[in-house]
Image 1 (cartoon, protein in one colour):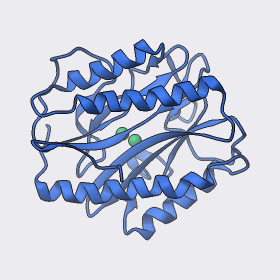
Image 2: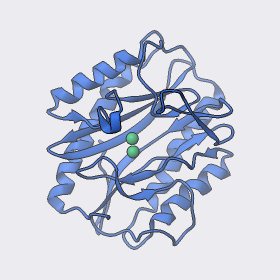
Image 3: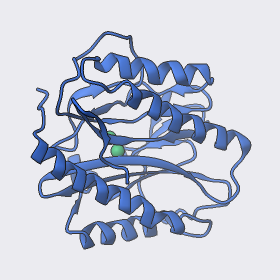
Image 4: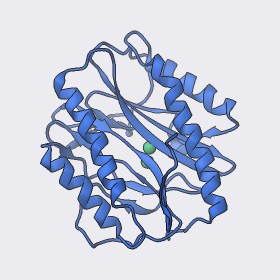
Length: 248
Ligand code: MG
Ligand code: MG
């Protein structure tokens, strides 16, 4: 069931989303060669708690960490670990925070030091694919209009679209209806209504979009070991326009 949010709820979702945004900004200067990904996890957890919020992912269906940290060919749901970031890596950090019962969810992919031309291309166009999706998030459109726009942009830029994982509604649960796939047809799927809150999250690859799941049963990697990027915002769609809840 898709729940539409009141103005008051959207205000709370905005507070949760802003904490997620601030956590990304807080981590940014720490993302450099030599740091362990588990250290980033601890920094984020302490920061989220200092804002009076709780990490949304820790304990969610048994996920053991505050952050999902996915490096290079890891697409999503990577486990923070003793892995030390190296110059040239790319790192996707997915952050969820719950504040007063409402969640925010946003992923961003960062370069570590000097990234390759190909890595920069992937990041630039995965971020742009996210904004192509957001442009279609309007009352009266359908979810498929968002999906179509993301897929069209990705294909035009020769990037693979991961299909097994999708965006979603956000509210008092971090994952709610509707699904927001990164592929599909215009004019299909649920109608977008005033008060809908969704996370749009393209996961694109430089090579094949086929996936493989690691032995930890969580971490999704590209089957061909090509690089993958992930950009996500939680947004509210209202009659007055779209509000990016996990932005400034
Ligand atoms: Mg999400
Ligand atoms: Mg996320």
